[in-house]
Length: 104
Image (cartoon, rainbow, N blue to C red):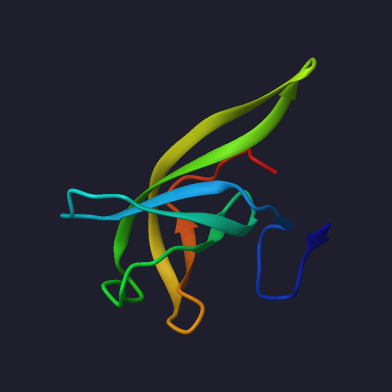
């Protein structure tokens, strides 16, 4: 399923992929999962204990599920992103990728 609205440049795809996010300057990645993704960003549910704010720069790694014949594999896609929204109640981050990714 895909979603689009007037505010977004790219169509979002619902995807529950493993994800890791690290604030710049931090030594540790926090593990979570995506809720949706697009070429330009992702919404990631990840426990950061209030340590993240809009405008923060982060590193991310997404584990993208794919099928290879009879096998299921995960391809790691990583990069830098900016936090454009923080939802404290859902522990979610809306990320804008520094570079667009062909992942949808």
